[in-house]
Image 1 (cartoon, rainbow, N blue to C red):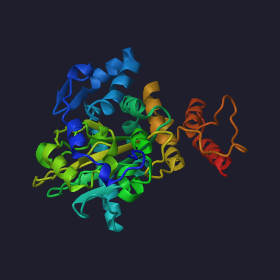
Image 2: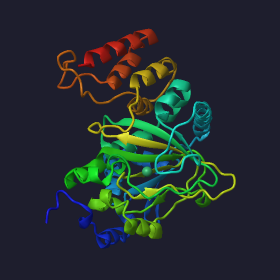
Image 3: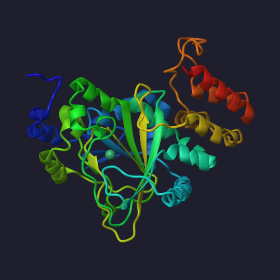
Image 4: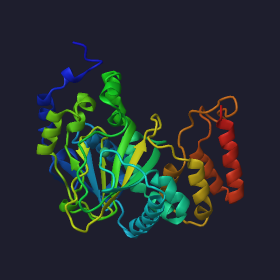
Length: 380
Ligand SMILES: [Fe+2]
C-alpha cells in the first residue's frame, strides 16, 4: 500500500486510541515536579536551576516531552512577577478597543463575537509600549523552552485570545502549519513532510488571567501528536468524538505557561462562567527553517524598542531572550551579491545588528540608519 501519499482510507481510530492510551511515567522526566492527567508539570525555579547546572539535559528533557512524551507540558510561574502580565493586559485592552472601533478582526475555529483576538500582538505591543515588551520578552526561561523545541535563530510571533463568559469551545484541531490547510492540500504533502512540519513550530500559551476549569482552559489530548496521519484525521467525526471523550483540561494560574507540540489535538474549552474573561497570549515560535504564520515587521519592532532598551540594565541572559524575540535570527533568505558573508559562512542577522548597536551604544538615529542599510542590502 502506498504509505507516502495518504488519504482518508489510511486513518485508523484503533491506532490513534492505542497511542493516546499511553501512561506517562513521571520518572522519565526527572525535572518535572509532577504529572497530572498525563501532562508534565514543571516549575520555573526547577528549570532555571537545571539550566544553570546542566543546560543540555534540560533542553533534551523538554524536547522529549513534546515528541516521544505526551506532547504537552505546563511551566508554573513562567512569569513569577505577574505585574508584567497586568501591564500587558492593559496594552491588550487598548488594542482591542481601538481595533473594535475600526471594525475588528475575525477568528478561526470559533464563532465571531464570543472571542477577542489580537493578531500580531508581538509587533503591536512593541509599538505601543516598549517597556512592557522588553520586560515580557526578556524572559530567559521562555527562550530556553523555545530553543529546546526549535533550536536557535527562531522567530517569535504572538496572538492574544480572549474567551468571554459564554464563549463556546473550539473544534478539536492541530495547529500551524498543516492544521491550517484543507484535507486535499494536506494530502498532497508526502507523509514524512507532514510529520516534519510539527518540528517547525512550538505552540505556547501564557495565562494572562487565572484559568479555573469553568473558564474553559485548553482541552488537550496527550500523545495525540504521535499519530502520524493526524493532519487528515482531526475533521473526521470519529476522531472528534474520541477527542470529546478523552480530552483533559488543567487549570492554570496567571503567569503559568502551557507549551505543546503543534500536532497535539487540542481545542479551547467552554467558558461557562458569568463574569470571568479568560485571556491567553498565544506564542507561536517558528524554527529558523520554517515560514511563520504571521509576517512581523521586525524593523518596526526594533525601532520601537531600541531607545528604551538603551536605558535598561538587563542581564546577559535577559538580553539574549529579548533580542531573540525582537529581530530575525536567521541570515537567509538574502541577496548574496549585496549581503555577502563577512566572517564565517553566513551574513549578519538583524539580531546581531541589534546586539552590536547596543554594545557600541549607538544612538537611535544611527541604529535606524544601520537597520535600513541592512534591509536594503538583503533585497533582491
Ligand atoms: Fe490551536
